[in-house]
Length: 257
Image 1 (cartoon, rainbow, N blue to C red):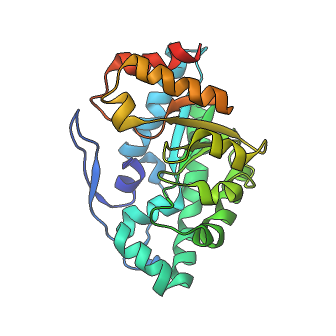
Image 2: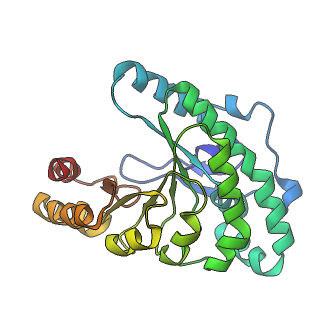
Image 3: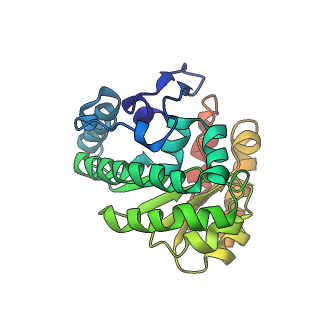
């Protein structure tokens, strides 16, 4: 979650085995403060991801590997802080366009680095959730950039956005992205209806209730709902809680088979 943020100059608390990393200092106040070093992909936090992909590619040659990059909206959260950046979308929309433009090339190039390291597909995580961002804001600020990233990355791209995204799935389905990974806040059947046959869908097994606190039978029941709804790739809805029982994760694949 914080690899690019660390390379861009944020201060990061790297967490523990049971706690996700988190940014603690957001260094930017305007677009001119964004400093992307020419050697940014040589930063240790960027290199380690590609090194991991190379190891996995050699060790598991017949398994699909999914890389991951963060989109300009999420990178702006890291650099400016969520509250400050969202206020800028209302008070300084032109500045927000400059910020997003300055950050769009980074995920495109980093995705290509991960492809060279062995990734078959890349997840583009960009957290313009419906809980914080209106569909009009997604359309005006991000939709053109997601279309641009879909064209620039030379492998299938899976877009992930947290939260209730039903009101922007019609836009997302017309970006040229191969797949949308969505949360359980959007019912699987509704997501399928909204996306039509314009893109694949991935998700949306509930994390806190089903995977973290549920049983393999609970997981199997949700998998069946997703399959009946026509979801193409069955998986957790978002970042899996770090203490999730392994048997519940295995139950996703077992139930799908």
